[in-house]
Length: 80
Image (cartoon, rainbow, N blue to C red):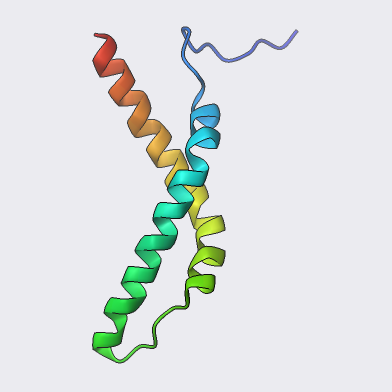
């Protein structure tokens, strides 16, 4: 019989990441857009807002995982 991973009453990282994904993907899109604006100083064309949103969908997954790990550490520190 397969057991669920032990979470000690906490949400697993994948649930935290799934809950935070829309916010993290939005932050990634904003940061990509601003990075595209800064690229113009070097001569690279700016990214369109639509391109930034499309790129933020796959890039939001690892960013969401990292954010979930960070939030988990904050929760653990607050409970001590």
